[in-house]
Length: 219
Ligand SMILES: [Zn+2]
Image 1 (cartoon, rainbow, N blue to C red):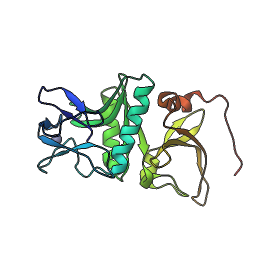
Image 2: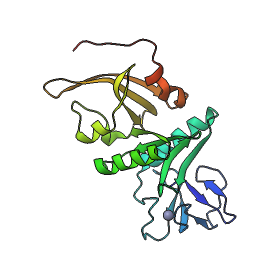
Image 3: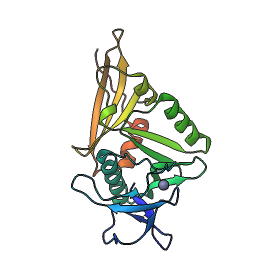
Image 4: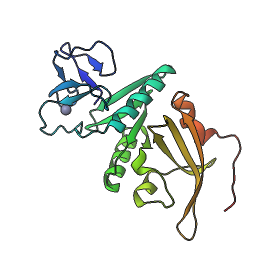
């Protein structure tokens, strides 16, 4: 996790400079004590001191997940967006990896989860009037075939048809795979667009609605 409460009860980010390792920080979800950690591979982060279950933050967060969250946060912040990292949403008893403006949650999904869980989480956001965009880490990237789970990550707009979003940690880019079409042999065809994390992420996320002309390709 990248945020914690300091002794004054204020939220601090592990990405800030000058945090004091000796001070006590608490998890904004369960209020348990968390420690500031900094290593060679992982970017600075907080970890629960005791591993008793915290319903909000899982402890086995990967370096990929932490770094992607941090990179997206920095990008949005640099472009002047109102963005929170790891926003606790009490109505849902869960955390949005990133929360932009008043109603958009961004979920950085790096590992498989059950379709049931994915649908529940998406529905829960919708029920309280929030939108959610699932952005997929390497393990979930689209290959030659669509898995059942990947089908649930698909979005659809009239401009670019079925599409999904991927995050590339190493190349520091966000990719859109769109006009996704599955042929009768189950092989998928699509077009790809990528943008660097330094570009305006909100503009990129609007692309499916604002693409100028409808593109086509031959199968
Ligand atoms: Zn906790």
